[in-house]
Amino acid sequence: MAKGVMIVAEQRDGALRKISFELASTARKLADQSGDEVSAILLGAGIEGLAAELGKYGVDKVFVGDNAALEPYVTEAHAAVTAQIVKDNDPAIVLFGASVQGKDLSGRVAAKLAGGLATDCTDVKLDGGNLVAIRPMYAGKCFGEVVFNSAPAMASLRPNVFPAAENAKAGAVTKVDVAVDAPKSKVLEVQKDTSGKVDLTEANVIVSGGRGMKGPEGYAILEELADVLKGTVGASRAAVDAGWRPQKDQVGQTGKVVSPNLYIACGISGAIQHLAGMSSSKCIVAINKDAEAPIFTKADYGVVDDLFKVVPELTAVCKKLVA
Ligand SMILES: Cc1cc2nc3c(=O)[nH]c(=O)nc-3n(C[C@H](O)[C@H](O)[C@H](O)COP(=O)(O)OP(=O)(O)OC[C@H]3O[C@@H](n4cnc5c(N)ncnc54)[C@H](O)[C@@H]3O)c2cc1C
Image (tube, rainbow, N blue to C red; front, side, top):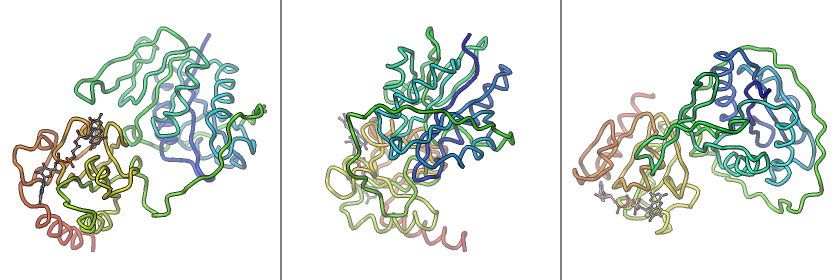
């Protein structure tokens, strides 16, 4: 009988990603309710040493697939190995990150296992021992509760929404033999972000700008505020389409879904497609000169004024506070 909660951990360049700890902590919480075990799949090359870190977040057992063919991430190889480990171990629940990599992987794995997958969930709970996944629908206009009639129940969790809490366990490391068939695809080149900034999906603070920034040079004041708050700069699609910011900065339905502790929206009207990407932020501040802008319906704090006046003043105050 299917039993236990399994997570699919993510690492990049030999370091576990934050989402891995969020998955581990969430799985621990669920498993404690059902008295089950938490296991993790960790794939890559030369990554065995990372398994102990997962133990600190409550993982009981880590299946490590260490193989040169699994580094860097390739959908085909990772999906095949992940599906095989799930099949061999028969967990009741499998959790992925709804990160760029997790979104890519989870659909493939679900198809291979012919199981149900609830994507981009913002909450999970157990009902009679069965997983119930809660996910935003219709660009965040409502939330749906998903139940599963297939096993394992699979869900991908939105990054930065679920708390990561240490929960000391001495996670046993089980090395699994991974047979990787000759892949039909291979990574030719990896273009790395050299900005040194935290990825938007993992950022605690995002200062975002839209068409109201007037042009690419307007973003200098957002960069300055973001630097003071140790945050990252985001953008609306209008700004990206205008060529003011790179596509990787886009927040929204066709950009990244973010859930920082603080989201400061500057000169962004709050179109439904933008809200779909940021309305799960814990605190939203909107700066817009139009008091009727829809962004204010989602904002915890709103400033109706010219952003070119407000942002530098806010930066000056923040500088004093962090000095
Ligand atoms: C299929 C589809 C997918 C989409 N996906 C996305 C997506 O992923 N992300 C996304 O963002 N959009 C997306 N869009 C586009 C979306 O509908 C909006 O067009 C876009 O979000 C608008 O961007 P904006 O708020 O920057 O611009 P605008 O709507 O033009 O708003 C600019 C705002 O700036 C304010 N402003 C101007 N000057 C100042 C100033 N000096 N001080 C203060 N405020 C000022 C104005 O009052 C206004 O509210 C999508 C659309 C479609 C159809």
